[in-house]
Image (tube, helix red, strand yellow):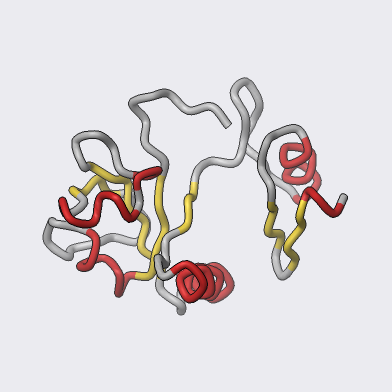
Length: 128
């Protein structure tokens, strides 16, 4: 998936993880993607989503907002010790944003993405 070099990806993580990563006040609006500064000593934990100036586009997630996504992030954190997932618009350059499971599968198959989560299902490209 190609993104402009200056446009960092968005990371999603549990709201409780915010003060561990971010060096700014803990005010958050879950509906917004807020630019914040990643703490110097945490930058290497999430390099794919931290810009060179340590800014980050942060989305916090609470369980009561989206239990399935929250549980996915928490499980990834249990395995990796870093409860952060890359979250970006699901499309490729020149194509509209994915709006259905069929769109998601088509986009998934046409990219270098290894896994696709659709609801309660995890699809691994290696198994197709």
